[in-house]
Length: 636
Image (cartoon, rainbow, N blue to C red):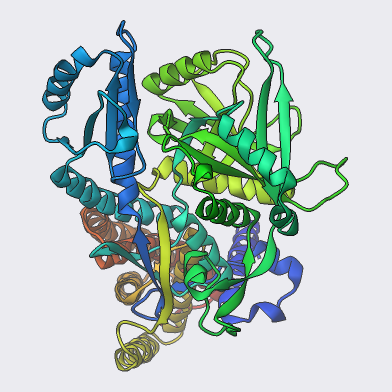
């Protein structure tokens, strides 16, 4: 065996071995493979909804939150306009009615002028509403108009569909179905394993709504709530603890205090109505005792429920419209006696000072002090300016970074931050979990935040959309086609036909390997492309074989005929495959759904066919001729 043949054989053996390793998890159960093997080779061939079925998810979207966010945006815009006014103008966003904004000038003579300005500057966006007792004197009361609110909801729903689809694609799940139906979003994922499904669901429902809010230090409300909790037996029974975080600002000023409540997760009995509101709590299979079921309750929920019940007993504990409680999940430090994680509260201004729309980029990096993963957020020009102004205004206070309604961090602001960047720390004590959370967060921040929170309404498995009868017929036609190709090629070209069949099998294996490595999903159009590839591969082999026959008839030697057959047929094969590739690129560029899936498989098939027909088949012929140095003819 000459050196060239030897090294080509080693290369082919390596390619075949790698292909077998990649495809093995798709045909052998995970439990029968060694652990070290599954750590490296764990991906499988994903079949589409049409061939295997998958998971049918129904999400509802809190469209009212999108309208409420518009009211917050109007408030920020108005505060910016009134910042230079000599007479003080207060802007508030009451919790009700939906999308409400209240403008309160200190000078009553300004009411008419400001009303005219609001109607002019926000024509079609707002409408007047009746003021309530809590709005105060001189109040100008408006809200997001009904027509504009409907437009916001419609746009939010359409945006949610696009964002969810992009997130699923980022996770490598091909051919998902994402559509809107009424006020709900329907998501269908092709057959995936349980871990992949859970990962994808987590990324889908993550709103990635990034907000910055100011913590209200030294607040009279929290002073009152703190004093009550310290002496309340019911709070003690619920293991709710009141604590104080105090500091003196570096740039002077009086001592600041942040009073807060903490509580830990626990199992607890709740009514069926409450269970429906707690995510992951309600399950029709759970036993019901005295109208209640036992669920895992977060410390956050325990505090919120306690405050709601306290307000019901004593209305003086009702929270002002301009304030709200926020919560952060914390892991205790190594010096803490109690190692259990807990939730702590923050008393926040309801107004959103900055949102994720100001983010231009996000990346995972590491905190040089703790060496733990954090997400660095870069703001756009306007966002950097607003963030700098905000940190300049609230020196000595805390600013909470809120993601999906959960506070990630609330550092003390000691000076203006003008660099246009901020960092988000990741909760939890497990570094690997923090790294995974940071990576997922960057994914959703880059693909865009959802306009409003999602809630999973139902999840069910669905069968193949083609139906079992159609799938069985597809398998039969595919098998019958392959059998006919084998009979014809072996019948006409004898041993050379066997080589062509081996080449076709290798071609199909390489195509399936590419599907696994790319994370693509095999659908019926993909199967059609696979069959078409088999036809193109056989056609290319016929071109080569007929050219070899012609050269043998002209009296060429066997090796000379093979050399000429492969070299001169190559241009015709390349020409035919190139024109098909152009059509495939056009379909990939302008097609969608099944058309795009067909184009991907077609282009992959063109590449593997050129490799197996021109390089691998030639190697097989060299093996065949290696022991026939003096052969006058070959089986063709």
